[in-house]
Image (cartoon, rainbow, N blue to C red; front, side):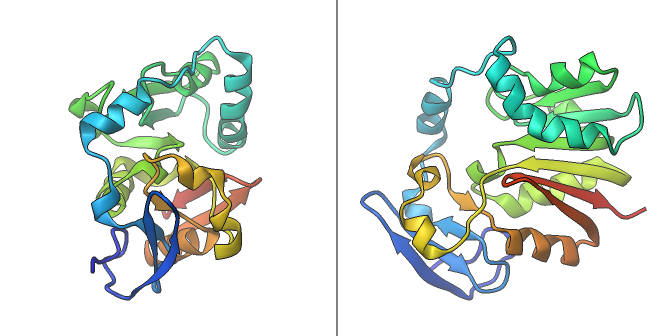
Length: 212
């Protein structure tokens, strides 16, 4: 048995099994996670990421990212400075923000491993389609909290768990690089624990504001 990779609770119960993996749910934070034995190693994980074809010039990809950038820009000050965490090989959200006058830094463990970027603080941190890939989400979550200035925002995009019936037929879990599945209840748990204001926008955007 393993403990929850987000909150550390040892109170987990079996959630679902498919032909590839077993999934467990935490009774404290409600995170659904893949049993550690089914996680990919870093080399296998990156080989899948290398197949992604997300280009800054792709209008469809920009529309996708705008689901986060538009509401975020409505809430932050002009010329605010942000970090795009997990930006991938073709950073696009950062370009979209820079086009609107915001200053951006980049970090990605595989493609932009610039640890210097993790030694500053920012008005906002964005993570689009990142959090579901994290083997140690608590470690990265604490990192994000430290990176954001008081009053700043964490902007996340990820698909959310609804219930076990929907999960069973959910395409999102079939990506073998997806290992941590959040729900609204999970984000509410984190917001309450860490004194964050939370707002859900649409089906997959979460904005969290750090207390002043």
